Image (tube, rainbow, N blue to C red; front, side, top):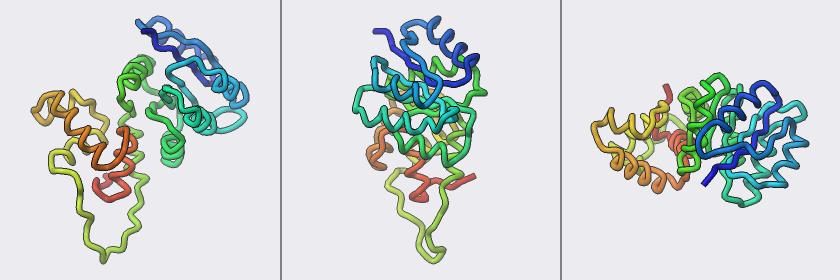
Length: 216
């Protein structure tokens, strides 16, 4: 089945590069595009796509409003942010709005295609620097007099979560920990269940807010 992709990006050169990479990739195609919040709103209303690539810095507003609008539709659509912003608050705002992946524009263009495949398979592609930014955003408001939190995660699950926070793929986590890909998947499912989240970004956010992962 072909993955239908919609692009909301105001830079015509970059939008064209994304479209070319997607249309030449096997099993996916661009079906619609927009370059502003206004035109993007119409694109979201029209639907007809499986993955929405959305920039945040649009000329007439914040792309996060479009992410929230798409998420509110309740469709089987995955939202992937592609932006030049690595600002912590923008990262968190887009995740809270419904984004399931977050890549920076300075990554190689092929990363976009890989991310589309990953996100449709249930993954949450996120660049290493963004993973680090999420962790840096976690502000510990607990009193120093309070005891450290009791982690619901096992030691191995915590090791896996640390590797995910550094941007490693499941396969790379398996290589580092000398376990199979299926074992990593098992640990990740347990992490998501225990933290009551559905994606890598949410797991990092929740683990950081609970003080389960130390910031670098």
